[in-house]
Image (cartoon, rainbow over all chains, first blue to last red; front, side, top):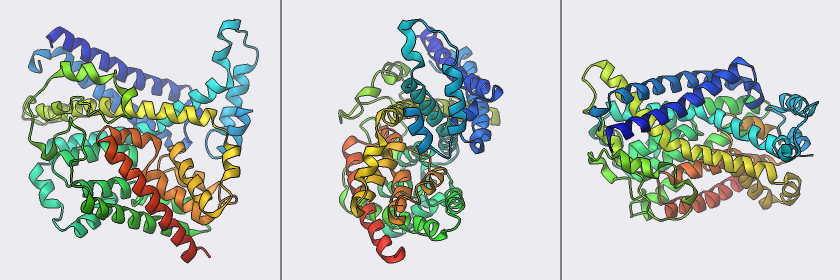
Length: 70
Length: 372
């Protein structure tokens, strides 16, 4: 795969992860998260949004260092 | 109507919030006639169920993916081979106890298992871990104990029956399964395959989720997992980015099955009429079978299903609740799809059949002996 396409691939994945992380953040912020999960689970989901964000960052970094993986 | 049904059936979870959201959605919103289906109750039910299933599983899937990435980076094949006892009976016992160390529920379990099999763990041990792990662990024991506070014997017998079922099935698999049950794309015994072919992986990633019922030996590029190890620097930063990189690859690999499974579950729960099924499950054996199907369809996480089961305590016998509590975490719709990402369809079918038979016999026996 060409480096440009690979970079595009990682960008798309990063965007998908960003969508998840952002949606969770939005739900937590607006308290709508309680519509969907038991209050006991809210903390775990919050943390998972942070983990998603960490993974997203590595995707974004990898995107800028494409030749290493091509 | 449907909303009311949901209200009755989900006493624990989001019903009060749900009712308020329904009323706020339908009050005073003028919509063009074409789009009226967007506000329909079915669609709202579907959306709520779908998002709640995905959100509840997400932390556990992430945890499983991270553990799996850590295993990939820091635990060698030799270590795994040294850990797992050679003797099959000891191996099965070892796998049953493994859940105490890794308190994951079934959504987090499957990435870890896939990694362990690739690293050379025998398949029967892995199967026992898949089955026993989500039940025999401290978190699940505590939640079952809390849910059935007045009847602690249900928590005890849940653990005992899960142990018996998993051990029986593990020994049967050890005795009878000789062929490699992994999907064609997954290499056995983990010879590191250096084919880092992203074009291949990408081409299949989003296209094939609808075809996974058929055993067509579809290779969707797991081999790339082994190839990153040397690309990262030696320091802790290199290792950290390696772990996160593996985690994200694996997350995308499992995530599509999770989302598709959650979608199917939500669809069935939206359109299935539960009253008719409840009336079927009146007899002794049929109530057990019903509870199995119910657990399969609901696809609850093993850490929270005890609370749902306790809400049925008045309508169903203790034995059938036990079936629900043991069968559900071992196999449900979501985890079937996730299993299909690792194993051949034939093996998953065999496992399903074995589970239904062994769990049914086990819970009927337990009911005779302990609950009467």
